[in-house]
Length: 83
Figure 1 (cartoon, rainbow, N blue to C red):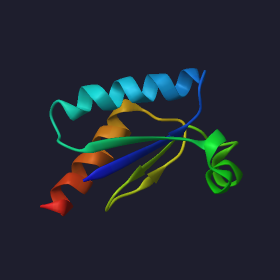
Figure 2 (tube, rainbow, N blue to C red; figure 1 turned 45 degrees about the horizontal axis):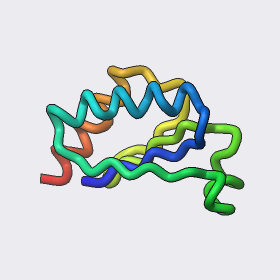
Figure 3 (tube, rainbow, N blue to C red; figure 1 turned 180 degrees about the horizontal axis):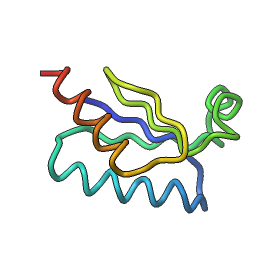
Figure 4 (cartoon, rainbow, N blue to C red; figure 1 turned 90 degrees about the vertical axis):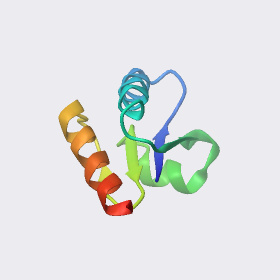
């Protein structure tokens, strides 16, 4: 399962979400891919006012606010569906 984190440098919320994802990754296996919206015109146009955005393969597209339980449950559901 792939999880894409859309963010940008010097984004405190992006850093917090990444740390939560790394903790959750210890329990649920997934590939974490980071995308800098400043390097992708389409992503910038789509997400510039919404970061951090979490795109879970086979699951939801999550926009802020990111509560740990919500993120964990969405990842867990996608993980179960991928099996």
